[in-house]
Image (cartoon, rainbow, N blue to C red; front, side, top):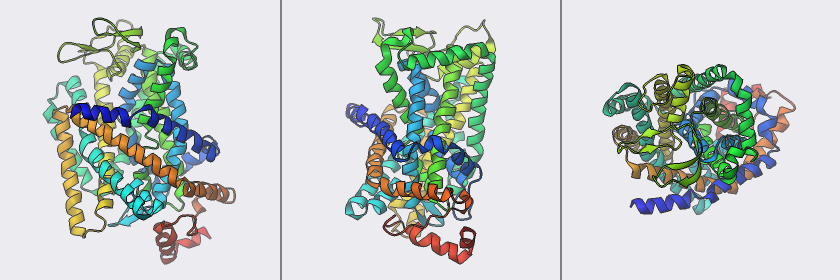
Length: 524
């Protein structure tokens, strides 16, 4: 079984998918005329002064919910791995990938808004919805069902345990708390939140996400201040290595670009189909507004949070970079080594990119020049990592819960309300159990199956957005045209049938709602 899964993962997560996501970002960037650079100010304005409604979640809550899914353990471990394989220059290519990925995030998020539906008093949408209603016909329906099933299994059942295991391991390392105690605490906390539905999840996410991101970035700023004289040299190293001008890392140029792009794609999730779920939950007067703010969430994930990780590691020098070969004793051959490792249960040492890079970086910054690396040292670094991973990973589990629920809602939307509610509660209980199990027992097969599921989501979504990108482009043209004439709060999307076929909410539901409530007056 494990062998078959490994083969499938290598096929699904092949360079073809990574290149496909990168090329998609490049092409959409040109189609949208580099909007992710030209309209940064508008993105921030829409996020801060976003719309609110009784029926949907606010613009800011949708961004927070999206970031909850994007910002996870990968923002710590993923960056460390990128530096291990590709050196400091890999960070530059992560930045490039984020800028290009913002264009992809716009397209998929707008599609989530365009083809959303109101179900049980909540807005639901995402790839399954725009595949069925946007593509249409039997093919679209089958496409949507396949995506929904894959997402429920991957996000609702398999991936939560990966995140909870990271939390439990870090708590045990920092304070010696038993794994089962952490797992039980997570299960109880999760249950108190997710049974409240999307509004409960979004409220918690909108409270935690800004706090966790700012707190993490603040730590990076503190370390910058401590190592202020090293900052110019660090950025010089990043840029020189990125263009193969740094002698130390000159032999891994290809690996550097590949891992930088790959980790950028993994981290910001643009094009993978996760962001549109949160984008669809908000009520806005124009779908482009969600495209703009969701694009900015990609920047927050990679340009801010991932960069914070990179600064902590690179300024402290607490990392290793391999040349891709292995020595006779099994240890990786290094181009650069600060001898940072994790002691494995069998006594072996893991020198590859792990959270230990950040932990050691924080400890070194606060312990001073006399600091000597010790993987068992439980100082401020281990405590910082434990707290960061708790917030990062727990909010990611909340986002998984919402994505799983949305796709259960899609699969059961033609059932009676009683059956729908029962199946939704079954998913919630299963997710809580998966979270507890992942905290107390690391199941490698479940992790691999989860990765496989996420990869399949990305493939399906990538195909879907290429079939449907034209309606999303029309929203951009309509929004930017209106923006030249009026303030964004007075911009309204009024499509014709041919502009957004089967977009029931925008063609019928929303116009009727505006007329009934009298809110149409503010747009006239």
